[in-house]
Length: 299
Image 1 (tube, rainbow, N blue to C red):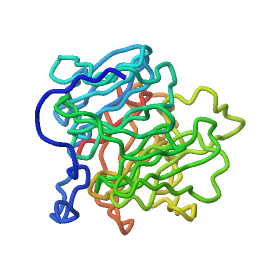
Image 2: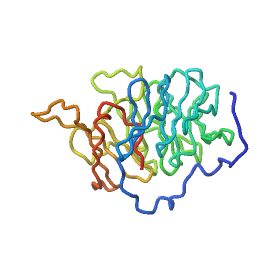
Image 3: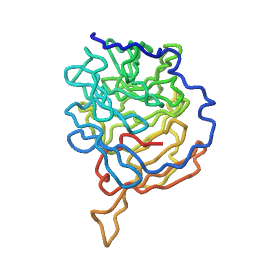
Image 4: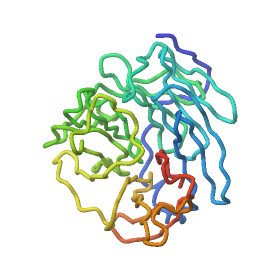
């Protein structure tokens, strides 16, 4: 594996963020988010109604940083690329390319990227290339990685789609989530890593593609019991996402009306809940995002 290393700050224990860092009340969301359009075009939408392209590439293994300013992806040739402020840098090479489900994932503070490497090893590296990659542990769950807000846990599903696993980066140990026999997506982990937003195959849905879904029916499962929790919002949910501070954002599909069943300006809605399931906020997505995948909610 070829690695570009620049002298800088040590990655070390900074992977785990102290709980006290999240104690202050979180501000309301502005509506900023990162969406994925056809052709793997990643764009950030801001509260002012503006769209800014983050990156556009052919690879299907991608992720956007929680602050909405950076993109990471693994090329078909196996390079881990980072794009920030219009510049693309290769941080690591020699990874497995051309496997859609082997996506990288950003840390909550948008400074580090974790990714699957050889033999189920999960590795993390600073996004600015200032450190050598650090091994976090080995897991069977390497597909659609999610990273908990406190920095300790990472979860993913198996390449065969028959299991969900959570890795503890502090101990290097993994646990298998009970009762998961078939799974097609892992969207995010709760702040403390005890719950995951996932998707299960529906109506004979094939597992072979394993690409990032435009929409999905979200299911919240406890780890490691596998118990399915009740969603706090009623209606047609087409996604859900945990913010680093523990809030849950549910993406609700635009409801057609008799007078405007397919209106071009119809929009989806983001509904925000606290840890107890109390509704905090509702935000209208831009109509342009209606048929795009929601990759990141910016908090």
